[in-house]
Amino acid sequence: MRNDTKSAGIAAASILAKVSRDALMRTLDTCQPGYRFADHKGYPVRGHDAALAQLDACAVQRRSFGPVRAVLGLPPLPP
Image (cartoon, rainbow, N blue to C red; front, top):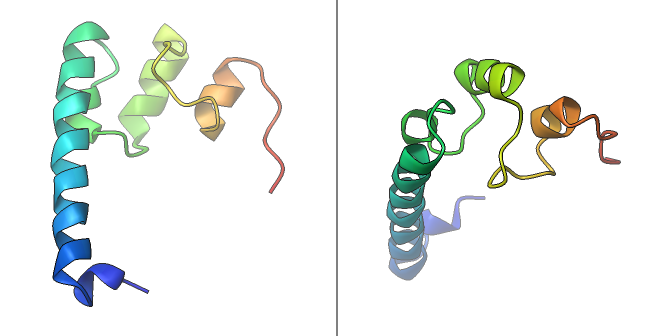
């Protein structure tokens, strides 16, 4: 269920979280060029998978994300 449609406070928090994450991803893009963090803002996209294959994983990438685990040679997480 989309709780942000039921509460203005939840909707505002959701917007603030997205704006903050987008700003962080733009900053990470300047620190870790090549991964295109500013373009995909943390969402899995085909270009990000290509960057992982070419550049390997960097320190800021979540180790719980399947493609990052794969490039690092880590086993998949249990469902």
